[in-house]
Amino acid sequence: MHTRQGFTLLEVLVALVVLALGVLGAGAMQLTAQRVRQESQWLSSASRIAADFAGRVRANAAQADAVYAGFDYDVLREPAPDPSFACGPSPCDSAQLAHADLVELKQQVAQALPSGRVRICRDRHMWLGRRLRWPCDGGADAPLVIKIGWRGRLPDGRADTDGGEYVPGVALAMAGLAP
Image (cartoon, rainbow, N blue to C red; front, side, top):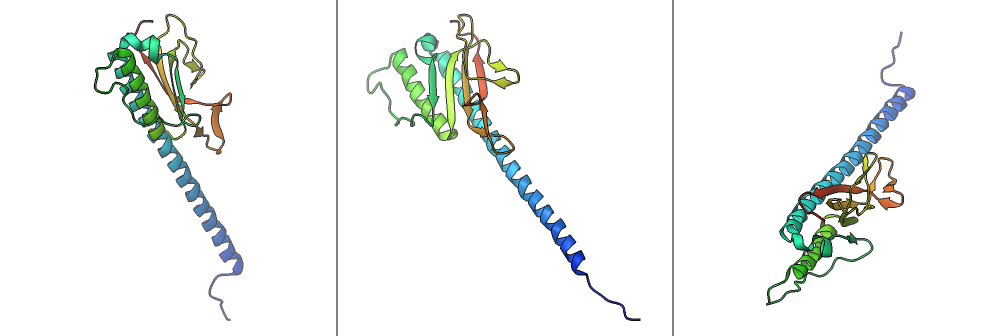
């Protein structure tokens, strides 16, 4: 009797298919991890920018409605402004300082969120279901809100949009700023 040693062609093909499925699964997992890491980085940056800017608005509360409220900046529709300070050698008044703050906010959003948007408005209804929303109701008793978002992606690769707009990632309501 003669015994054969080695593998049959079918066994080799089955092993290659199993190996290929494992490699594809690992690759998909890496892509998902990279997307989640990027979204986490954007969320962290947006939270930091919103908190920092809320402090600036509180420090210059007299301009909350006159200059800050109604601000809407989209990185993809308007380029980031060049760094400039409007006051020069003379002291700024509060309105000039508010405008300089908004220029710096545009620069920060453009640098941290390549497809970002920021909106400052009075809004009582920031949430629609479980999602933040861009529109502001502007109610007289509504808090001043900083909304920052970006064009994200769903797990299947489609754009994460809400009625054609990209969805805000962060909304910070600022207490203590009466209309």
